[in-house]
Image 1 (cartoon, rainbow, N blue to C red):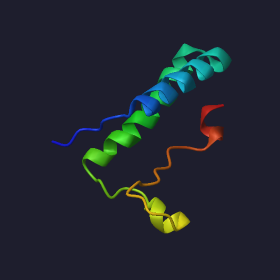
Image 2 (cartoon, one colour):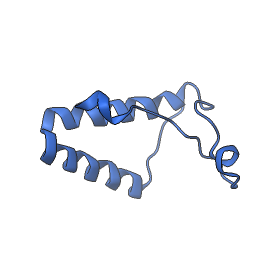
Image 3 (tube, one colour):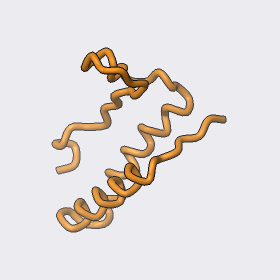
Image 4 (spheres, helix red, strand yellow):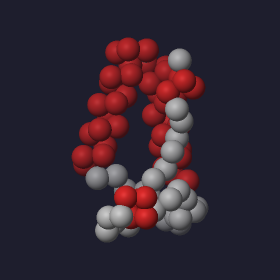
Length: 76
């Protein structure tokens, strides 16, 4: 089975996002939002071509994919 590995920078940014959301909306909401994000990312293990290629979207050389999780209105 494939495994998602976060870079230290990405992991730091997820922790910072969780902290910011916790401060604004509470710990429970932060956990729910971060879980939604990480569950979507984990979906790449089963379907690695999920989401459009960044290279095609922005005409840059990259093997990254763009994965949309949710608009802001869902969390209000």
